[in-house]
Image (cartoon, rainbow, N blue to C red):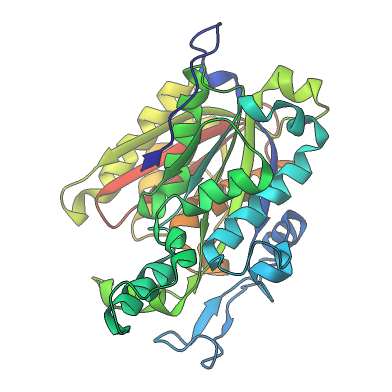
Length: 370
């Protein structure tokens, strides 16, 4: 995780994270370039996976879920995008779509608006390409300096802020499959500490040949789900600020929780405890949970059921439709809950769970209410 220096806390000091609501969201996904496409794709329940064009994406995977027809120049224009890598372009586009959804009010408060964006390791393709050029060129320093910024982890977040004029705290989060949830938790902390009045938050991931090979070789259990890409983002602010700006709250952030496990066999029980703790923090009973958006890892749904007891819930399963979107995974799960809320599936008195088990020893969850 990397962070730019944050502004001094507001005069009113610390605030309760429970004051935060989700009032706008966006998604650039394999279903299409906007949130309408994402919501429609989820409602249809049709997989966005397709056969990989081996000329464009030579690599070990034969199927993937990529954003259709996406390129930096097509999405953002030719000016300023010649050296922009794919994950940065996806992030800048996703944040731009979110600002459009927020309306003109946001432009009036850029200094007190934060940006927290999750990523994997930045762009794996950019890092590996730049390193290769330094090894294969006539001299190690015969590399394209304009492409160096793409090799740092906070490139996508920083460029998103610069492109859209966001001047508040700017933070990059990297945490594997749980990146979206970790970004959400960090954004709540920025708000709670008085460093900003509203936070744009989300995560992005790219599909590339280099990422495909790394995922292929790092698989520990022989399971290699098809890969996906895209970005999801949302606006967190107080309910009062949302109403003042003419935005309708879609959900309330009640709690985020994380735990670690030592052995793979302990992951499910650890997630069960994590969910139980989060529900207790949120003041939500298992009987109030009506939606669950799981990451889709082994043993996860059984762990959630153990925490909720014998109760029927609606499952929002994103991974079978989009593939393994890595750093963007829990971001897309969060967007799925917000899309469901727009469809009337998260009424007042109902709670939603977003959960995940990461392969590197962490579990996490978030509790949202209508």
